[in-house]
Image 1 (cartoon, rainbow, N blue to C red):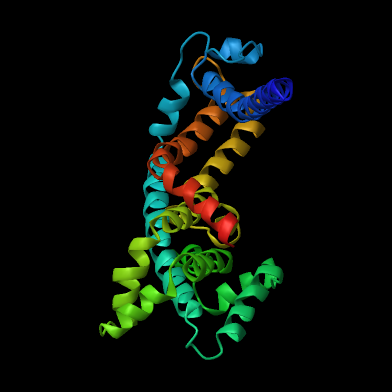
Image 2 (image 1 turned 135 degrees about the vertical axis):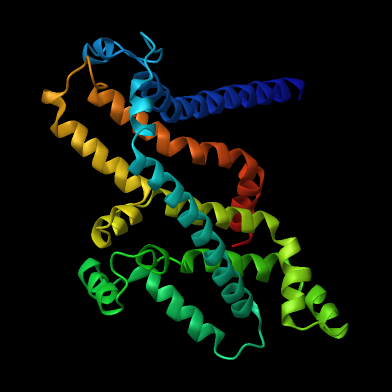
Length: 293
């Protein structure tokens, strides 16, 4: 009996070691490219041209960051993208919260019909050309609204929140609030939302990261410089650096590869700074959805 226990314990230890090794390798796959990009962005051009930069920068040089920060259009795009992301996330959460709560209430007539309509939008889309024609007919091309309105509602996020409300908040708690005279708004704001912090933080992160990283809609709809988000400016800068690589003068301008890497870091760091503050809610929210959904 003891031999069986020892053998089982040894097997568990081996399994734990293999799991840690596997997770460690996956983590390195994600982290090492980021570290290498950061090293290239602050290295000297001669080492970058010679492809001698792995994980440690050589010949410290911040000229690429200086070039980005000295570009008034890039700085404007940064602040515009921050404003767009914040307003988009707030508005998206408002729409998602109200729709999810309404569809979670058994007394709402036709809720399965409306839920099915929302679900269909996850599988079928008109396409880019009809979307462009719609933006044109609404007279919102080349404006703030063509970046703000189309993705404001996510059926996927709504289903996550609706499922959480249905499975994780006791119906008896809502019924007790109704007996105390609470209307739906008081139930939503005083009962449901305080108990849904984890999933709300998860959905906020989904909205914020999705909007921050998006550039395809701006590529199709935006012409004015003042409405170009940071990711589109980053993509344009990388294209420009690639096409002008042979003409670059290392003595007066940063190496194109350095400029690409610095641009990537410039666009990525804000999200990296925000993520640790919502990480615990993000993890618990995802796990709740996985278990209860």
